[in-house]
Image (cartoon, rainbow, N blue to C red; front, side, top):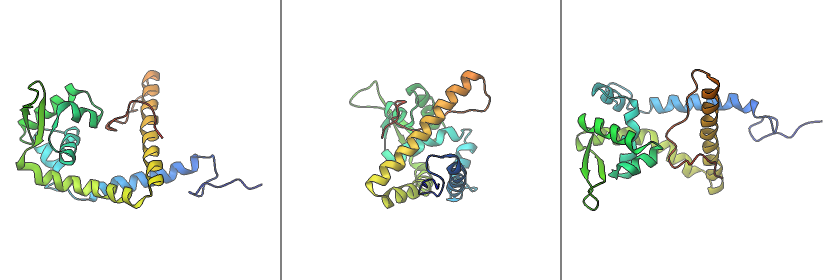
Length: 190
């Protein structure tokens, strides 16, 4: 008796066959992101490092290039980080000349963060090289396919978080949670 097959070619109900495909696809995607410009001598990551900062600062810059100036709390929501962490990152980025911080005229308790003009073009090139293929992918999918694709990514992030929590409780070394999926409340959406 032949089992039904998943569209990927593996037997239906057996995800192990698709794990190898996911590894190949994720590796190819990561390689393509690295090769998409911005990683060379004049790349954003290298400029960030030369300024005494690290890769953890780059997502703040990406949020700002995509959304424009934002309050610290909004950046925190986009990155699923605490406002205190984003405030620290923004302060470090400001000292290195990547962003400007100013009080919100409407609410002086809030701080608005914006990209500094001196690094704007570099950040925009970096973001375009990484985000345009994502936009193109989403545009190539139907609404239903896009919903399934995004749902799959949300499930992956949630499973990474669950695994990290379980691994941490068991004392397993090397398990890291997936950070940066903005707006996740720890529940999976469909």
